[in-house]
Each structure stands twice: as C-alpha cells, then as structure tokens.
Image (tube, rainbow, N blue to C red; front, side, top):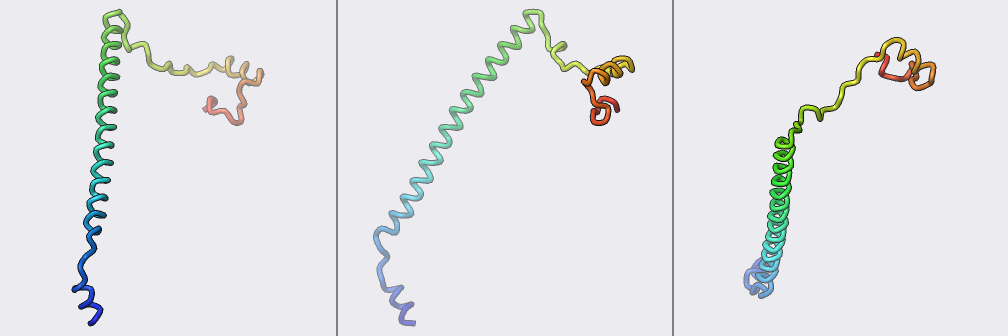
Length: 100
C-alpha cells in the first residue's frame, strides 16, 4: 500500500494539462481545416450545378432536347448478316453472346 500512498501524495506534473490541451487544439484545428475544405467543395459544387442548369436551359431554348440522347439498342442480326459476320471472322459462334 506504500506505492498507492506515494502516487496520491505526488503532485501531478504541470505539463499534463498542456498535453491534453495541445491535443484538443490540434483536433480543433484539423476539424476547422476539414470544414473549410468542405465549404470550398460545396461552393464548387454549387457553381457546377448552376452551370449545368444554364446549359440545360440553353439546350431547351435552342430547340434541342434530351430525348434523342439515349443509347441506341442493338437490333438483332438477321440470319444473313450473322452468316456473313461468322464467315468474315467478325463473330466467333462458339464464344459470342450475340447468338443467344
């Protein structure tokens, strides 16, 4: 029990609070830096959204629409086209998924 009494009677070092305080200060600084980066990213995102809205408005007012911008679906090959591609070596009938 002597060791417990010594621990209780010894004064705490003065730098103990400074260590905790410096860690807290460092965490706050890192949080502030992160917040600034997020705010900057949000500003850039807002600017990009505004630009996209302007481009969409110009497209609509210019007579263009998004209707024709989709990906065209592949039409199935006719038997004649399939035979020609197999004979030309463009399609391997054993490995290609186009035959299904």
